[in-house]
Amino acid sequence: MEIEFSSQILKYEFTNESANLGVAIKKTGPVETMPGQQIKYEFKTIQNQSTVPLSDFFFRDIIPVNAVKLDKVITGTYNQSLRYKIMYKTNKNDYRVMADNLSTTNNNAIDASAASLGLYSDEYVTEIMFVFGNVKAGFCQVENPYIFCTVKSNITNITEFANKSDIGGTHNGEWIISSSSWVTKLFINKPPVLPRTGY
Image (tube, rainbow, N blue to C red; front, side, top):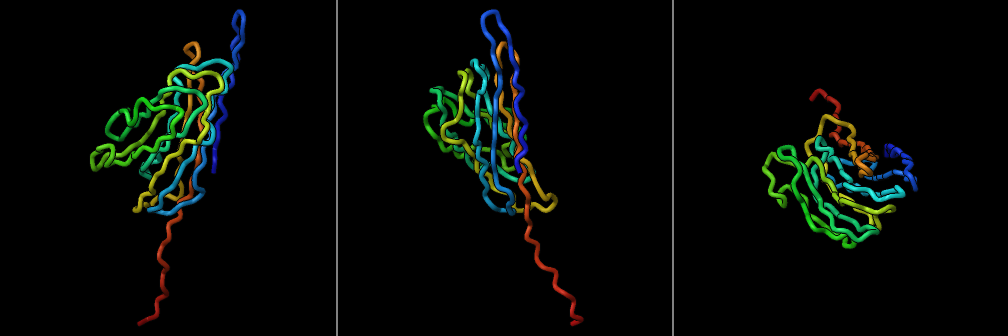
């Protein structure tokens, strides 16, 4: 189930120009899943819809840690040649670098498992963020980025979970933000209750 929040479109008037400001993010994921399964979230829209460049451009994914653990990040490719980095946050530490000096023209597969990142046994990734810096008007993905997660095998107390993302950038010090969310139903296959026979 996709829940989208459209970006706020702002119009700024200057002496010799006007600027329409907007950003967009759209994602998809599984409609339902079971404990222990690997699932994929795909980002089908990553856009600077503004008519002007934006600074501090980023998009972020907030991992539903009550239900899944992050496995892998596929970076996708983008229509402007830039260098960017991917940051990650855990339940024990603030943002650190997962991968740096990446090219927007190369599609990268990054192992984001706890073992690969050197996390503690009780540490897990809670957020990842793609940091692009300055992007021109019309910046967008070419090959879609996506992430793989594994549903925890010991879930018993939830029936659905939401994966949330947001995107943003600044123009003249003003933030332009948009967000999207995908809800997945959790199907737990419980053993059947056998009738009592008296024996």
